[in-house]
Length: 142
Length: 141
View (spheres, each protein chain N blue to C red):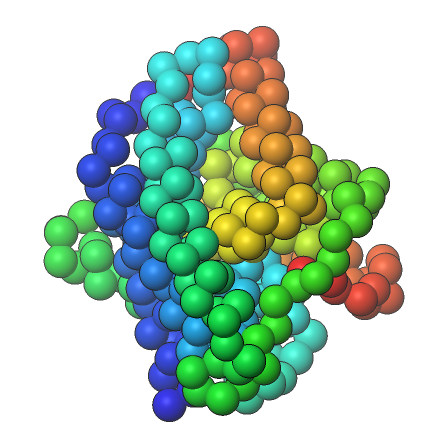
């Protein structure tokens, strides 16, 4: 169980949106993380290596917050086998469906893409059903 | 300059994810747990991100190229097909199971929590398996 944190959620969201806006306006690129990783895997230094530069920035940014605030909570409820399965599904699914929470959920919906809206509805729905099944049908706590 | 722009954008993205606590799988799963102790924080993250992102799209569409003189690579695909929905649905199942999606996973690597590294390694394996199975099918995003 976690606390509802509307202020930090909004501030963080504004930063994520600003990041996507900067990447689009400065570099003409979409901040879709799964697409960036997918293409960086096949061509790490393609297009001047901007993908690796962007991806390296993600843990640096999180580390900066961790240093500034003294802590960054990461609570993982899933067991190792479940995490492995989850990773495979996220990896495969985002490549098949051309995007994730950032590419579809933030960037795609921002330009009114029907594909992005449909994809976001699909992963929100399957995610909610999965959590419902794990927590309320199979009875896993936390 | 161009690389620095990409790096700074990534850093800001990571800061935003950490500030909003989307790097915490429990927080994400609490958002998806609509039948339990629902935590709507993620919706606020997305809504706030969408406001700024939408403004940037409006600004970008007025331009013929990016501020650093590059082509604007805005996806034009419009067809909702089985591939899109199947992929998004599989992604959602994994997202619900682990509470992590690609951005927060990479950002949370910085915490050194072993589970995040396990998830990320598996995620990369999933991406590579897609490329292997589909022989690097064209990506349209």
